[in-house]
Length: 85
Image (cartoon, rainbow, N blue to C red; front, side, top):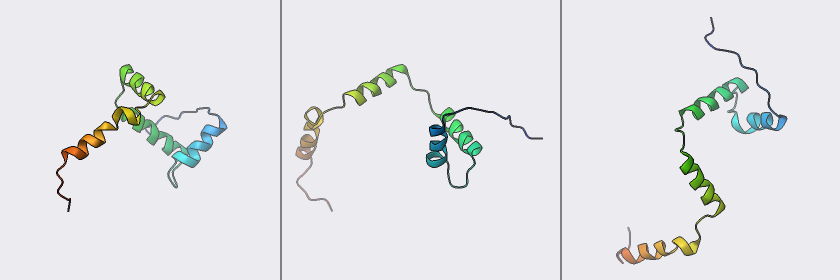
């Protein structure tokens, strides 16, 4: 006997289309695609709320060239003038 459970879900047509066109591997059934994606999501480490807030803030206001561009110059100045081989 099969040791799995049947699950019926509803989703908007655009999500179903994205599943079929973008997420499914060639020859993979919808059931297999959803199972693979769920297993991968469950393996991921949950992120803390602080990390989520940091990532959201960075997306809204990423660092500018002015804020971190100095590091390129500092690295160039710290490397010896010997050419790399």
